[in-house]
Amino acid sequence: MLKVKFTVAIQKEENWYVAKCIENSVASQGKTIEEALDNLREALELYYENEKPEIEEKPLFITTLEVAI
Image (cartoon, rainbow, N blue to C red; front, side):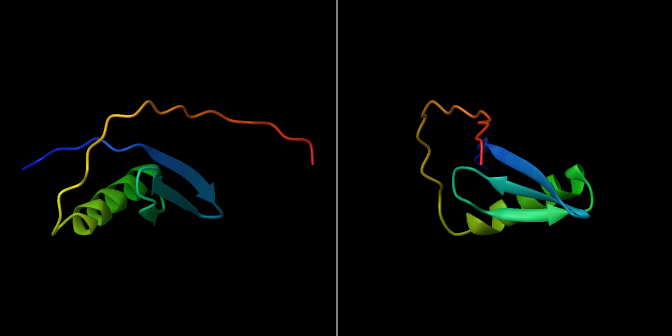
């Protein structure tokens, strides 16, 4: 079994937490952060069920940006 680390962004939307994988845009949700992550883990396992992910080490920079609108 291959273990791969993915980068995940979690955002609260109303009564749900939405967890989204940065590398492939797979997303899931849950009532708690832990539930959202568990559901995303399951979604990623299903997403890669029949294919091996392409693993490429790239530097990843995540930040916030304030914009006046």
